[in-house]
Image (cartoon, rainbow, N blue to C red):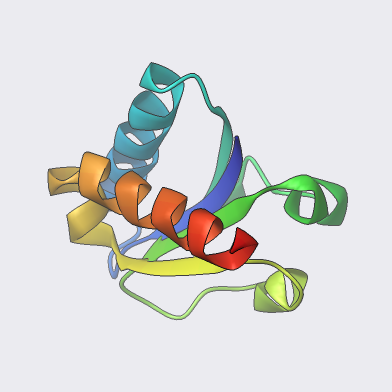
Length: 106
């Protein structure tokens, strides 16, 4: 499975990057291909291309603020999650993303 996503928190410092790390670690543990863009205090980093978004099975948007570039996901399968859930329960967030993909295939 190919997963992309964006993480962002209100202050744009620690939680943005903690969520990125937690989601990437959980996806890799499951053998998924993953790329997570951060939108923190330094602006967007590890930016997703439209091609990466289009090729992904699902996009996880784990944020606590309004983010930039949402139009990239207009035709994508998107799971919206809270940035704190991505940090504390990344397995649940990834489970929800997998369930969304399976539901969409049915």
